[in-house]
Amino acid sequence: IEAALGNPDGATIETYTTSGTTAEQLPDLPIPDGVTALVVYLPGNAGDVFLGDAEAQFIPLTDSGHVFEWEGATTGDLHIKTNTAGDGVGIVFEGEGGT
Image (tube, rainbow, N blue to C red; front, side, top):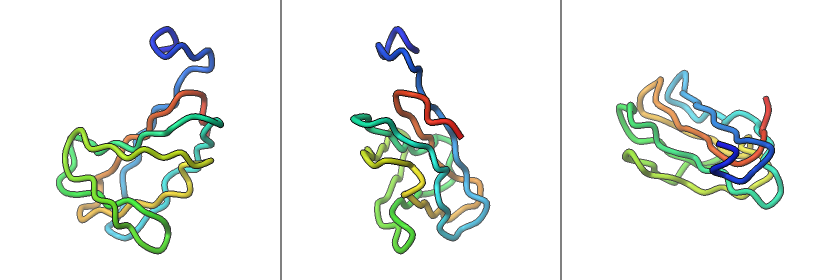
């Protein structure tokens, strides 16, 4: 991965699945300055995933290949809601996000 990305610090690749059908905060993974995180719809999901903040989740991810680009300081600013518990998203970005 390091050779492909040209990034000596590696990459962060995480999967988050919901435990219910109400809004849930994504893990608090710090995103390095100047890096864009990708929030990716998981191909095994039974339904749509809605992405937003704590108040409203209005950005739909509805099929494999759907991606949302996030340039914030942390993925913890984002929340997802699913119609089926166990559905979720992948989180990918350059650099070590740590947990």
